Image (cartoon, rainbow, N blue to C red; front, side, top):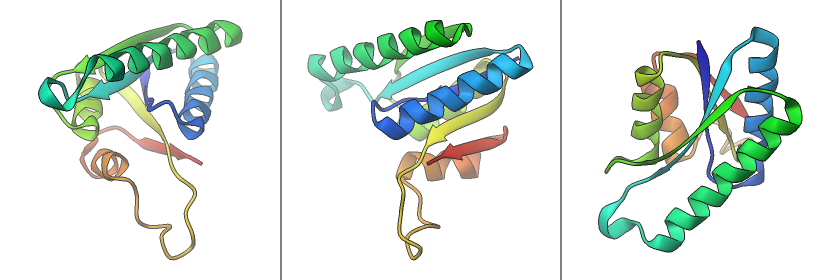
Length: 130
């Protein structure tokens, strides 16, 4: 049993990671931290290197909290939301955790494109962390 957390390198995504790690520690689960890039012409080496740095930071935080983590740089020709949902199914995750931008009251119900896709399409419960 595992928890999948999507990381984009933002502070909110690292808050989501910390939440996922705390939950995993309480439940005795593993965390998969994923960073998704579309690939092909939409992705360059700089994007890949940045993705690797984000995942290395995730490993450092997990080690600090003493939680098992596996990181995955996903470059599979899919949009991030679709990639996260598919990956969560592949690893039989029990939960998906994502960071969410703080929004005004009017914008509160409007999520980012990836988060909206995950919330609508995921079979697992989705936790959005501000």
